[in-house]
Image (spheres, rainbow, N blue to C red):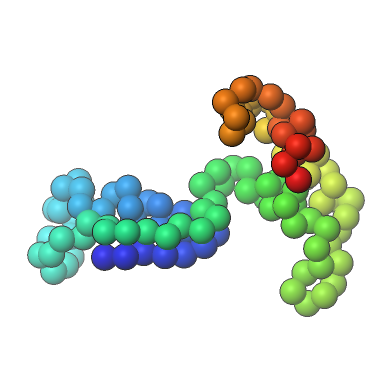
Length: 114
């Protein structure tokens, strides 16, 4: 089985890849009459998976908040800026390891990589 998707679907693809082939679900699958077949995932293409659901709205605003909506109407820039600031604050507080292997603030990495 191959799975592919993006955004929220990408997160589902990640979950399928992590849980496929697990005996944990065998009893449930048997109970609902699912085919007795391997449900392992051979490959997955998980584009932009949303896996940090608690902070996704902030991350989305940081990434796309200045863009117009599909209908062309503007986004509430005041709210967008608030969510963007919260995301930067969240990332800075986490002390994530940058690609180069050193710990730096999110704000500094953004200036380097953007």
